[in-house]
Length: 311
Ligand SMILES: Nc1ncnc2c1ncn2[C@@H]1O[C@H](COP(=O)(O)OP(=O)(O)OP(=O)(O)O)[C@@H](O)[C@H]1O
Image (cartoon, rainbow, N blue to C red; front, side, top):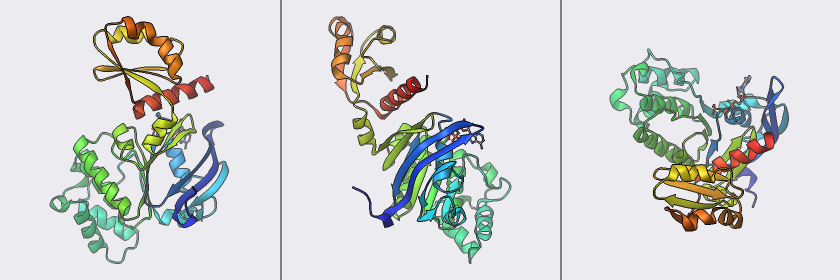
């Protein structure tokens, strides 16, 4: 079902971008609804940042067209920028200003009417009261990211663009950061976020997986896993490293990956996977149990398929 137009924040078709003659994003089309947390995943250099920036009119595609917040991404990027909060991979606030000074400064840059009050409200919202006087440069990674998020939402954007916002941040701080993102989305903010963390992907309403500039999968996490049609065995017991070696390259075995104390063995065709592993399942020392593929299994498989296409 197509979402009603008023609910669609991003609607783009056929976006393509090359740098120095090398295609970085190929023929990308997508829609994002209001209030959604939309995750972008994919290997390093696969085109996530480039995609995010094109979706919001911050970078002009070589071809393709579409709208963001109802504005044309090709001709109305100035209007779009006014409503987008962009948190880049690099911490871009002033290290030698305090939290309050940084936020007040942002409020003034955006011409907010009462910059001091706006900074105070952001400080309260992010639970930074006890640290308001601390220099931004002295904060831990997690608090820095919280501050950066606070600065991003200060001007009241409708759309947030978060480029790997929690890279290198500890699990507790990451969880708090995500709780805040969910609270914002609940209030109607649309959030586009790139990440390499599977647990974060699972906290998104929808995800898109990009590899080699192509959008390979999208939808809810459950839908992406189901659409991959991967049959998986979870193998436990002794000698898993040797087993993994023995399985690699067998026709019908498309992916072998260790997961903690287990080995995940997957194939795109259940019958072929069963045939390819029968001798080991029946005669080996390990326990083979049919299992559900994880999101990571699916991503590894998607990537290997594309690599084959580009080889
Ligand atoms: N302005 C630019 N000029 C030239 N090449 C660029 C430019 N921006 C990005 N690239 C190249 O385009 C490719 C895709 O980069 P992009 O940053 O979109 O990937 P990414 O998926 O966000 O990667 P990462 O996960 O490492 O952040 C990379 O090879 C990068 O070097």
